[in-house]
Length: 226
Image (cartoon, rainbow, N blue to C red; front, side, top):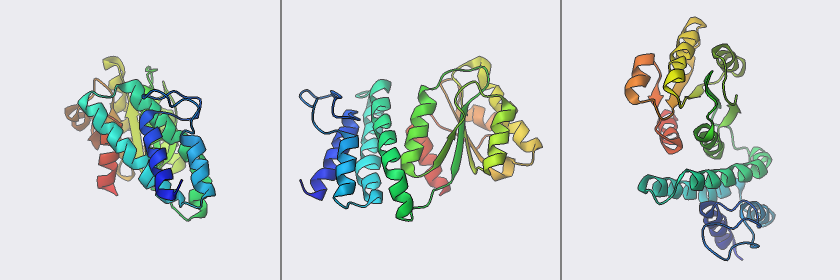
């Protein structure tokens, strides 16, 4: 298998959501064949640039996954499976990217706000951000406002992502933005919000920088800030 074929194989398996060779995938007959983690290891052994693996075999196929999700061809579990493949690949590539001198695009603190335990959307965003080259500090779920603000301060983070899936918890996002203002951090960090009950209007109301309907829109917003 030449390098081009190997990169294409990785991309194909990302779309299939196959992290390891025992995974089945969307198409039949794939179980037992090398999947993302095995193929990424092969690519590194073959001397393929880690940066090329990310751009050609991780970023591009996730853009295709995003399109499939928008058209309804893919559902959330399909998208999550592909995102987890990217996450596993990035774990393998991280040290090699550092050796190659690829710099982080910045620290991104992300959390589901206090009182809310939903994390699927947040987890997808976290994984895709890693694939985009961000250093992600995931504070998990049900995170108090003070802890979120302290993490932004501690890591000197230029980006913050807030998630909420409940109308009763989304108001906590305003508490976070207000606390950032009080602590003198608001002008230093871009605040992105997301979750089913949130909207662009709500983002403006609470003073956030952007509303992201899904993980792919979050990537688009961050690319505008680059």
